Length: 304
Image 1: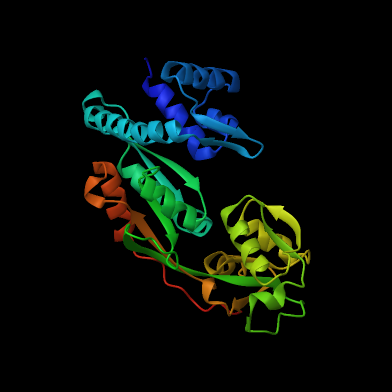
Image 2: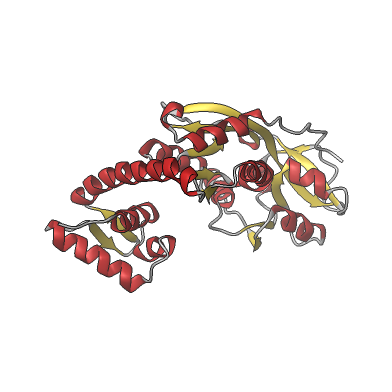
């Protein structure tokens, strides 16, 4: 039986993505090549590794066993590469980081740029996920570090404070809600929304909150950034929900009004979560310490 690191890495990507196509993309392989590798692995092991369905693939019992060992072997291989990388003068290690949308768009760009400048031999594999998904994936060892909303139950994971922010509603200055200082989310669901792409973590989060009160989120347009959401809101296409840090920047140059959301979930205390700090690779520990050391910017009033 011959299964190499590339096979194990491909299988991990497919299991994490729930799709052979997306797993192949993450592994930088053509779909046909990835399918052949999986088929060869199944033949070598004498057992099916994936259950294929309309919604994607899931590991069989044999696949789950292989996945557990693959994570351990790949982590050990990564640690070896880190330890030897410094001698080779190349990339000393890769850090796998998962983040919710708020942290990814508002805080991580600056934090990571500073860290990567100080550590030229380190790379970061960053992926956007929902906070509750991140907790599960960190617990399973899929990634090294997660940034999640403070309201999420992290179980036995180790947690450290990261940043604080909140979601706010932005509306055109002449909008009927503009005179309000605060509004509840369910009061706004009768209006058209400008939001992020439907598959973004924050948009799925807001859609879930709307579904919980039995009302749809009426998305007129989906965009790729919170700043663009504010710009389109300014022109009266709809209302938007964005981090207050984004809204405070936008209100300086755009004709919008910021309104606080009264819902408890709107407050965003963001936290760092890891399975075991001491077990992290050296550069992953340094990134956690770097993120904890950076003071969050002072927040001003949300209302304008």
